Image (tube, rainbow, N blue to C red; front, side):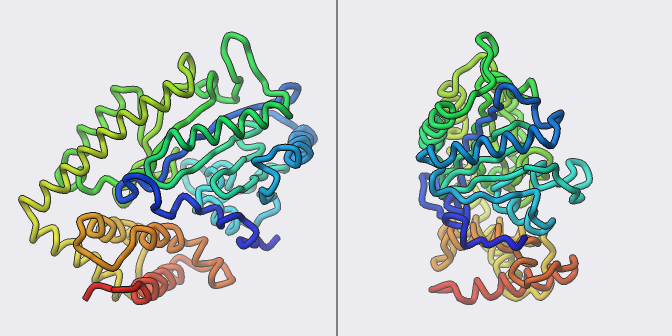
Length: 365
């Protein structure tokens, strides 16, 4: 198939708009709910026919569910490897649903009847590790808002579909660690100040002591690049969705305060050094002709910090957020209309970033 991105509401990227609270530090907030349908084997052990029946049951129900009535359905199992990678780069599908090997990162095939429904600020993965994985995004720091939307959609789905539920354990999931609420609340946060002041180790250690965990930009199985961290709850059993979300909000609010303090310390104690470092990052992006993905991520992190410190007056956080996604390999291949080699992608990435920065209004001199 040829993936038509124009059919996806807001391209599935409403969370990039930098319109929420603390958007200069928190890129997005997400609530993910894992659900299964009773009467079917869980996806890892389900036969092809069962997976198809689950998908068909959801398709039939979607027209009766207000939140999904205008959703776009993408059959992930009918997408090419590059199209699946592009969906993953937009955070619309997980590594597993994209067919990415957890250890090597190689792209493999995906089982039949794999799909995703996409709305403006939500997605519903079908036949991933669980039959349904509902995820709702909000720009900036807005975990409560994401939870309210997720709970509404969950009620609508639950009224139409027979959830697998146990009176003692709660929602039943393929992985025991998700049993209970089936909820993973997370924020995608940018912490260059804590990294540069060498305070990040203490902060991350503190997260684990409070029952939270951290991962890279793309969650489980991804490396931390560009000082972007995904912070989320570890447990789902024995506590309500509201309790888990409230704990995450309290902890992340404190992390934001520490990041803001770290940025003030950098300006106070090493202002000219930091300013030089960040302007060099901007200069490299503005003039590079060959730009590997990891280097681009780290340089964009520096420029994003500079924007947060008001060192640049013309670059918007929204533009920098878009660059993080659209400069990735599958997006570059999609723009070129063919699969790019790594070397070709490095050249295309440099060209794309230069063009975006040159076209940005009020470009700093």
